[in-house]
Length: 378
Length: 158
Image (cartoon, rainbow over all chains, first blue to last red; front, side, top):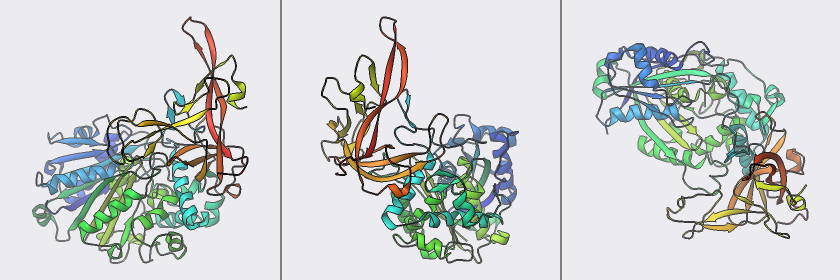
C-alpha cells in the first residue's frame, strides 16, 4: 500500500439549511476542499460520498451534477454514524491501493430537527419502544455511561464536565453549530433526556457537510511542502461480546481499532497532540478515554476532573467543540473530524489551536456497530 | 394485572415472539432464547442462521429462560417518542442462562437511589394495548397484546 496525504479540506458551518438540499450542501464543501487543495473537480479521479438518511439518492453523482460531470467513478457509502469516516477511508484506499492519485471524500447529511435517533424498537408489527426498554440513542448511551458508573463509581458530575469542556472549546470554532459556554450547574440543571445524560450532554441534530482530498506522495510534492500524512486508517466491526446484541458494546470495537491504529502508525497514545473522538453523548467521551488508551482503566473520571483533556491540557480532546457543540450531521461528522485535525496540524485553528500539534487522532463510532480511527501526522 | 390472571375468553398475543404465553391452565409465561450447540452462547431473537460467537452454522436449540435475573445497568428515560409514557426505566437484565434482555423495570421509582446494581429482579407480564382484528370468519375480535416486564424480586432473592 502507498502512503496517502490529505491535500485539501473544506467544511461548511453545521446548522440548519432547510432551503438547500444534500447535493448543494455537499457541493459547497467539495468546492471549499478543492480551493484549499489548489485543484479543480477535473483533478479528482474518484468521488466517495457518505450520507446515511438518503443513502439511496445517488448523492455522489448529484454532487458531480452540481460541480462537474467528469464521468469519474462515484460511489455512495453508509455506515451509521461512521458514514463520513468510512467515505474518507474508501477514498484513502483508492489512493493507497495505487488505483488513483487524487480522490475526494464528501460527507453530508440533512437531519433538520430529527429528534431522538434510533427509530425506536420494533418487534414485527408491534412497537416495543418504551415497553421492552428503549432502543433510542439517548438510552443506549445512558446505559453505557451507567455501566461505567457501576464499574468505577464515575459520577454524573464527571460526565457533565465533558459537556462543559466541549462547549467551552466550541466558542472558538466559527463552524460549530453551537458556540455557547455552559456551566456545570447549567448542564446538571438542564432537563434530563435519559439518565445520566441531560439535554446539554446530548449532541444536537442538524445539517452539515465536509470534504477532504487525498493524494499520493508524487501529487503531494507537486502541491505542498507541508504534507499531512494519513499514518493509518482502521475500520472495525463489533466482535461478539457478552451483551453486545442487547446493549451495543461501543467499547470493544474501539479498543480493537485503537490497537490496530497504534500498531500501523507506529505511534502510541503518548505521541498524540490532540484527539477528536465520538462524543455523541457526554457519557461516550469518558468511555473512549480508556478505550483509546489516553488513560488507564477506570481513570477517565479523574482525567476530566483534572482538566487533562481541555485545551491547554496534556491531551486536548474535541477542541472543535465535539459533536456536543459542533453538531453531528451523521454523514458529515467523520470528515469534519478530519477537517479539524488537518486544520490543527497546519497550525490554522486560531484561538482553539493546540500549540505545536504534529499528531492527531480522529475516532468515530457508528452504532450497530462500526468504528473508524485515522491518525494524521504533520 | 397479570396476564395469567386475566386469561379468559379474550385472545392474547405476545408483543414479541420471545415471550411465550400460557396455553393451558396452571402454566406460566416465559421467555425463550436460542443456544449454540457448539459453544453454548445464548441469544435472544428468532430466526438465527448461526452462532456469531463461534461461527457454527445450523439451527440453534430453543431454551426456556429463567424468569429471575439481576439488574446489570439501566437508564431512566425522560424524553421519548409520542405515545410513550415517561419517565421509565430502560434496563438490561442478566439471566442465569448467560444471556441478557432489555426491558422496562417496573414497580420501583425511576430514581437512581432506588436502583442497586445486581439487585434481583423477576419477570411479570401485563397487557399493554388492544388490537381489533377480523378473524377467519370475518368477525371483529379484540386481542390483548401482552408484554413482559421485570420488577424487583418480591422475595429479594436471585
